[in-house]
Amino acid sequence: MRPYELSLTDAAQAIASGELSPVELTDSVLARIEAVEGSLGAFVAVFADAARQAAGQAERDIAAGAHRGPLHGIPMGLKDLIDVQGLPTTASSRVREHHTARRDSTVAARLRDAGAILLGKTHTHEFAYGLTTPQTGNAWAPGRVAGGSSGGSAVAVAAGEATFALGTDTGGSIRVPSALNGVVGLKPTYGLVSRRGVTPLSWSLDHVGPITRTARDAELVLAALVGPDPGGPASPYVPLSGRPHRTDGNLTGLRVGVPRNHFFDRVAPEVAKAVRGAVADLAGLGAVLVDIDIPMAEYLQATQWGLMVPEATAYHQRTLRSSPELYGPVVRVLLEAGELVPAGDYLRAQRSRTLMRRAWARLFDEVDIIAAPTVTSTAARRDQQTVRWPDGSEESVSDSYVRLSAPANITGLPSLSLPVGLDGTGLPIGMQLIGGPFAEAVLLSTGRVYEEARGAVPRLAPVAA
Image (cartoon, rainbow, N blue to C red; front, side, top):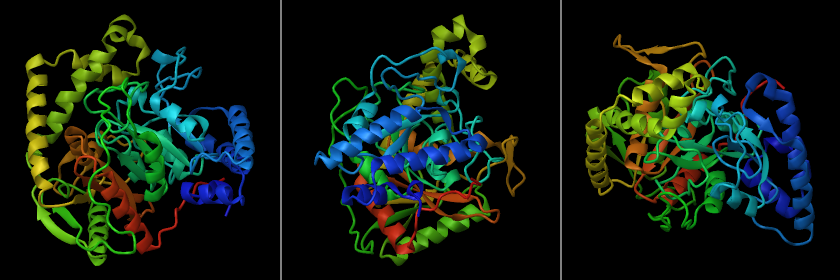
């Protein structure tokens, strides 16, 4: 196996044992970027010389006995909303064409302290305001959408262009591209990971989290990101809660909620079949399946948009009025639409969210996690505008993708997307596990047991080198 094919966990073990050096790993990943980036477009910029220098320093430090932990010497990518001092943060937009970050974001600083090596900045849908990332091709089929808005990060991990990456998630932007590219994506509990130094889309819905090849990899990255940050917005230091289920091959006693409504409505048959099969696998490992009803499901999308649209416009208001021509046409229309949202509608969306959070909290008196599809269908064609469902109804691609992921943003609950199979055309399918507040340990241990039981080997997308 070539170094770029290794999962974070395997690469970390190889580095710790001396079987692999950070220089060898970084050179392998950079060579992979050179081979496939032309067909994928995952990166805004690659900092190859700086990455090689950092890898050399990591190798010397580890040899001298100063090993910082599992991320030391591991090459990674950062979504181009995340500030790194002295480097551009473009948000994949002409608005930020000449922007340079003055200081590190909290997450970038923590990854540097852990010894991770920055390869480059990955593409986002402009200012994270979309679910497709049009600059980037899907790692499994470049003519298909990457998903968004963290499409560049997911594609980089899926294609072996980064051992892990960070994304952001406002309505599904970590989990949607992770599902569409066959990798693991974790949206932590709201506020668990600091957003200081991360360009916002919607202050009350934004999250930062890892995209990796396995649940164990996500656990390692999350451990480096959490911790108190007095200067960070909505960043309480709350120890992870919930009972991590055993990782000895079974899930005995784990209560898994299976939604009767919303999450399996208007879902592609192959997606529903794969996810229900994965849920059955959880039951075969000892989990207890509990049928549940999702509360206030009919108000989920209206609440999501009612919060996100005016908050996004508020952040961009000055630039939108002074230089609207710098925005792409799709994002500009969305931002201008936000100017028309009455304050009363925004306040009603806030009230709706409060009611939803209370109702969802009651769900977790009955279950430990909820299992459902991450997205309604696999990756659409890049020129595709709508999805047609068996009942004859149509839905925009973006609306169909956000429909199942947005509930965890509205409620602020942690959600983990895992690959669970391929459709008939060979495109990945994802299942999401949603937990109670700060129950990341439950989600990640469940994901690990599921992966181990299936004998899942982290599989890179079959892009042609």
